[in-house]
Image (tube, rainbow, N blue to C red; front, side, top):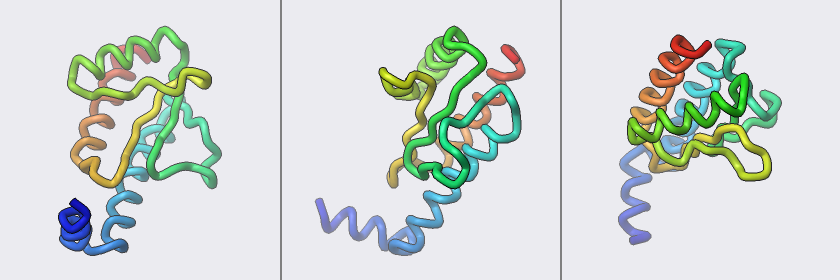
Length: 115
């Protein structure tokens, strides 16, 4: 298993490639959050995680609706931490860039309908 993971990392350009890929995924999602007042990031820009992107919507009701509609589109696991609330998108190494694109598209559609 470790051999397979190491070969996969090498196929993406090694650690530098994985780093670039993760930065691109996080930047795409943070750009979508920062482009509007409808979504609000939890963390200050200089303290943001590249792996777990947390954000809020204008109300808890909208957050619940967001999770429900996202899950219906096979975007699971977006509910935030039970103590903090909000939403969390986990962008771990194996999460594809296409998944971020799909989430950002959904976020734009959701804001258009509910903003």
